[in-house]
Length: 394
Image (tube, rainbow, N blue to C red; front, side, top):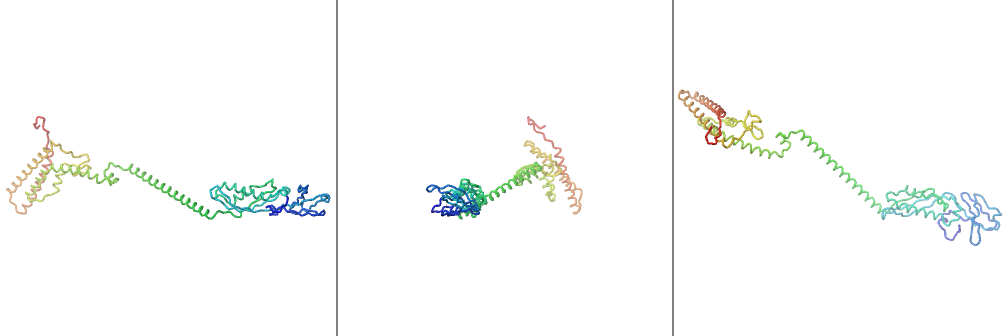
């Protein structure tokens, strides 16, 4: 290696030192931990490797005779140098600052002695390798282990006579603003993931609740008989008003038809009670009303003794006047007979006031019973015949 006035990186690190040899009696010798490389000067400014000296070894006087030498001591011990810089990553505008110590040693002293700046070339190779490799990674994935792996992977560089043995990452970091932005982005992504998980959980819970409601509704409908009006109203209470309005209208119509049919009987009973100066019993009117045992459209009986199948049939328009007239005649006849019986009892007997009141009560009971029985018998005995086409009654 030719030594110039300016020092290169190899000379700065004292990897190669020149041993001065002046005069014929100068006798260079090898050093412990070094390899002494003897260069013979040839011609004008030229040199060639003459031999290498081990620790304590020297040149013979014959070798020194008539020759001029350049003696270089190459350090063979483990050494290190520091590299650092700002390296780009795969993400735009994102860089990392790295500072590392590279451990190396010389594997070929003659190549090192003959090179211009072997250690500087090794340093440049380490930096270029870091630049090319770190450019493949994101900032978050760059750490000491990755940097150490990249540097150690360079290994032995044969053409430089050097080999990298290890690396230590002394510092690694990013710009403070970039770190702050990175933290904000990570926090935002974390919150977004949490909200997404919450939304998914809420949707799943709502879905399960709806499925459970549908399943329960299906089970209830399978077990509940909706043909029963009470069950129907229990399951759908919002339909109660419509159901009752429909039922009330029909029941009112049926009840009014029934009242119109027995109106003469009720009128006769009221007149009879007024004539007898006796109180009017509403239960008796109800009994007259329930004599035919009609029922409502919901199967609710207006009187006792009916069956669900005994639905009342409204009389036809042609036969309704005949029923009313027949019942009116029967009630009038019964009222006349009752009045005659009462007059006969008064003529034959002249009881005291107490006997008179008792007799009045007896007569009232007899007349009521007679009226009821006559009304029932007359209702059963009346037969209606529709007029023939010629207009004559059969």
